[in-house]
Image 1 (cartoon, rainbow, N blue to C red):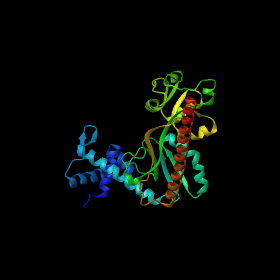
Image 2: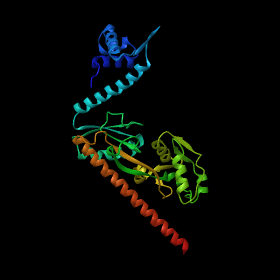
Image 3: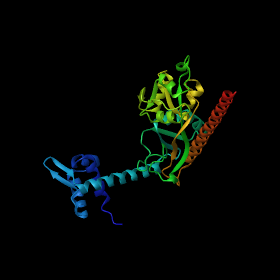
Image 4: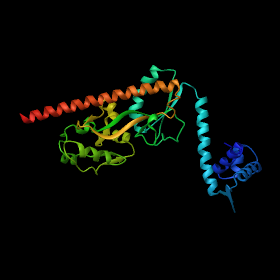
Length: 315
């Protein structure tokens, strides 16, 4: 495969990214004429015009835009690969969604750090940060597989939804037994009303109007509002596990509904993982197994309570 000069390609990518020759020359620490010469040589070799001259400077041509996008991605991937090679072998970069990070990972991370003091886990909590083209991380967690191949994914646990509120909020109130009862309760929503609609359609008390109440950007915010007594939030029980155990929240109706969404551990390089990455993978999978086991135990308790209630009614 014969490629144009890498110097010319990098010079063009810099000029395209920064929007002109002058700023490219400053970043590359060369003269403007040197930048112009490299771009001119590249245009001659490729047989296309990469920039169009306008009265106030230059703009990318259609061919230039396509090449710039390709080069930007390619140079980013090269930089990420070099960074991984030079990185401290005991430092790992992890990317997770915000609520998962704050409510599930952080409370457990101290256990991993205590068991593996040599490993430094750098956790970034970002939205939409673990697509195949992102790079720059050793492991990630995402809800749903997205565009990742199966070999890059390890299932952690499924979301199971149930309504929660603060003990002070429900004190003196009768817990809801039917859909109509929920009309008396202010609902707390995460971004949209989908989870409340799903839960209302699948619990034993029948559907109810889910359009009232307050809406928050993240589930974490909705749960914080529930802790403050603002109303009832529907949540993945794994995200509220510590708050329930500590008594800050309680399950209002012990009927968990699956929404079909699964948290996955994402590994960009599953065949070349460093020891620190393998240690963290083993640990987080074990933690997820405990979460799944707790969910199965809760399901058995709910079934037993339902059977006991049915038996009492028959009597």
